[in-house]
Length: 374
Image 1 (cartoon, rainbow, N blue to C red):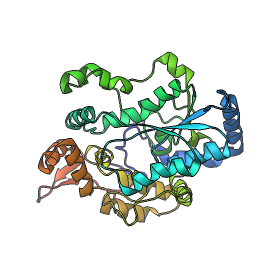
Image 2: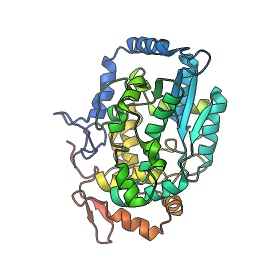
Image 3: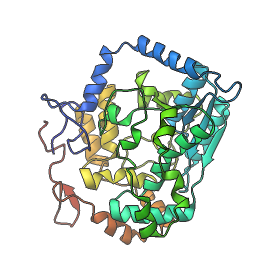
Image 4: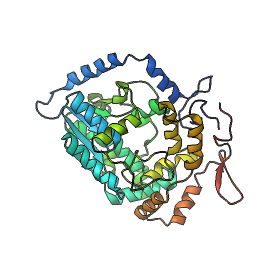
């Protein structure tokens, strides 16, 4: 493993690129901001909004995909209060036990900004069957939920005749990944690797779920997607997760302070809705040798909130340490014993990146704190 000389991101992150100086594509994208004419970008956003503003009379003229989190608060504020649009919000609830912060935040985003939210509560039987299958076969336990998070807002935007569908950041471009093109259009985000296509036939055959239960996981047709104009807000403004958090707090967002301090995260304000869901994001660790603490430590370096030495120490302490509460909630929902859970997890450790120590624990062969930079 090699690591970015500016942040702590390794070259094992899927789709990330490094230049000849050893700087990762996410750091390059962040540095590129100084060359962007943000006033011009904002004018482009105004033109885009004007194209759809009032298109349905007094009915909704845009849709926003939300979770209730810090970025959702910022997106709704920006589109409704700054751009003066009339949004309808769409969300997918994952059926895991919600944190108190999560319960509060989805309510707060509606109450604070005066917006209607239409939520999908997926079929629990299907979610459990697909969770076990995708976990054991692909190491993607929340594939079903993640797929719906991408596809459901598109289907609903079509149903409500709101072509302008607003997303937050372009994850691939902002943080490095597949399809890291700098573009306002979010049409290609299904290809970012988070919830890739799995054939309906395979899922029906292997899990016993019905085709009808999977209907919403299908992407809209090419003709339907051509009608939509999904956009990344991060293209038009300088996206900053930490600034979004501070703003959201000022409008009633709750982080996990006093409720739960997560062992494997570098912060307590991102993805705070439920515990079990976080297992999926952490599975980057056995597969690719980095997880959520690396992701945020790298961002904090770019934002000037940490130096690289501090980020390395954050990764050393936290990245490997999947929080026990996440495991308990995941196992309770999916029907695993914890020993069964860890037996499945054990299969996904990449032996090219990991080896077992004298205690039988998987450890990175080339951790960032022992490895030269690129």
